Length: 307
Length: 307
Image (tube, rainbow over all chains, first blue to last red; front, side, top):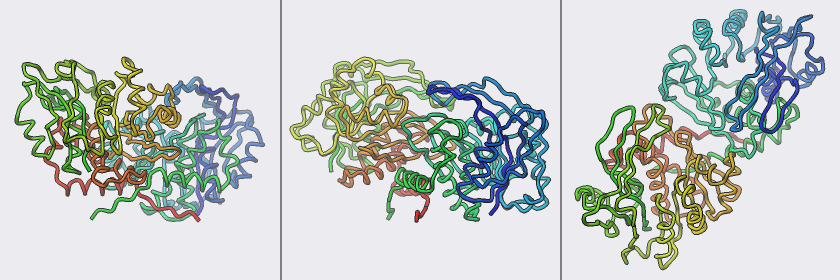
């Protein structure tokens, strides 16, 4: 089934304890689309860049089967640029530069061929742009997944709450879940957040894995204990791309299938952090993915028979 | 099979955001023994208290089937006392008072009836006392599990390394694993620490679960996302008690059985934090434990068939 991905396509400049990059391509929608492309060839991208964005990178996305008909290229404008530096523990990062550029006035135009999309992935963006995308779809998708961040909780709470009330699945990190709910306990935070709209809540905990909440059910997926985390940029978006990609591939949105989708998302994220930026996501092969899934199975499976 | 538990039996005074206690009983060996007592009736305690320690508390341990023949009661001396205050996030605590008292000159005397123990659990103590216990056993136990803390890494590194070289399983938290190995990555830390002696390493991550390493294998057990963590004191010791209790009950030290033991340890720890001190561990019943194990199974089990 087809996926519509909306979000940023950007330039990033990244510094980690292992090195630094010049401007490389990044952005939530880039990571989501690339990751989802390993599960389905029906990924439709909606985003905006300036005419400084390299044609070869658009072709790279197309080679991954990503439909770029909805990627606007604005003449005489510049692509969104973000620059950040990770501290030694790789868990904290400082933003050095944010230049919104084309993203400041992003009007998400949906090509007619995207109207039949069954899965909608709202990458992190102004909440009002996210809700506009939902409103511009004539038919509600089977599943709407939304990512967001603390910045919008601080600056656009009302719009954020409106968008939240329109989606099925929210994906945020633990710190954001605590801020959004004003609860320290993640179990309590989940209840509050699900009362705001989303029937499913994913709480990402970075190196500590991810939780999926639905009604009174909870599922926990670990992160692989990796020897090296080279660059965490895009890991959360890559996770979301694997999650929705697997759901779209299987066409099944049951809780049990969402568990599997979370494992696939976690596996994709574990690749992402092994190299700078999108590098590791460009040339993955299916056997690597299969082996990685096997690692996850071995990591958590145990057998206890309760009499 | 029988377990020998050595460690502190103490008075604690605890402050959490939910309230505070007067002097209540605590200490690593108390938590370990109580927790293990739910799995086997062959728990043999080696510890020391002063004559200020209430007889009723010793009887309470005995009612749990714990053999207190090796519990020395020192006349005209005072029991070890610790007092601490947890911060609002419950992850950080400040020590307010530490009075070693009888623990300052603890000479662990092993009753003859303890000599045949098959499982040895060395609770957190001066490393030289831990190694003395090993040396005083005429026959090496089938499995030696050791807990320790950062304090000994700072103050008794050499003795700590000696004891480490004598044990099978080390159980420490993530911060301690990083300090002991001087590696930030837990996967790298595990390799280094296993080269110091222990063939198995458990890294406890509190609300983020626990990892078990052995050779190139790794197993991850989650913590239950609890709505309330009332008092984390003793959770790590309760975990260790459940772990070794389950191993002794089953008599099986294979990696697959250690996985199960870690789940049982995690379940016991999840009870411990629900009330102050040992309160929740005093009157658990087997059906509560069974239900809790079922919660763990549901939390992490998923099915993926790789073609």
